[in-house]
Image (cartoon, rainbow, N blue to C red; front, side):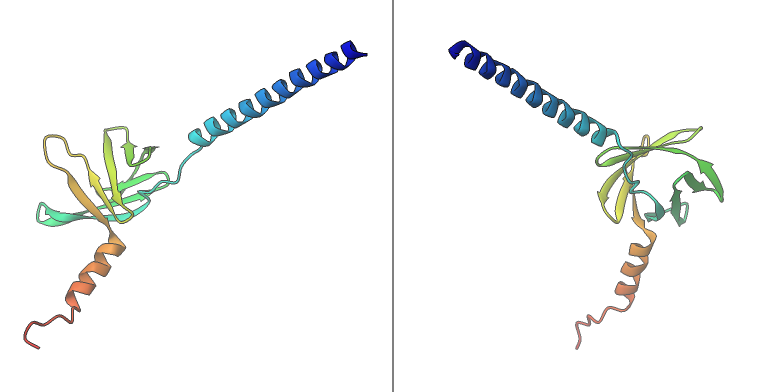
Length: 138
């Protein structure tokens, strides 16, 4: 009788170990799948450079399938990580670092960083500066 009860306890403890191992395995696999799921592309939309390049601001437009450059659509792949998006075309790859929701900086070889703002945010900022009610002589 005592041997039978010890045997049942042993079987129960082995079963509990298998269940715990199964749960841990499922959690680890779920975390791995979550890490490799496609992420939302934070670059989608229109961006305008904060400084003039060749006398006028540069304009970038990113779509789900690429980007508009020099008036034509260029197919591209996006390698998205936490704070960095690498845009890979058949000609080159360019890194963009996310500064905020409305600002990115582009890594430019042999130069400093080039900053871009979302076109809508840039427009709102310019309108706010033009309609400023601040006057030091009032």
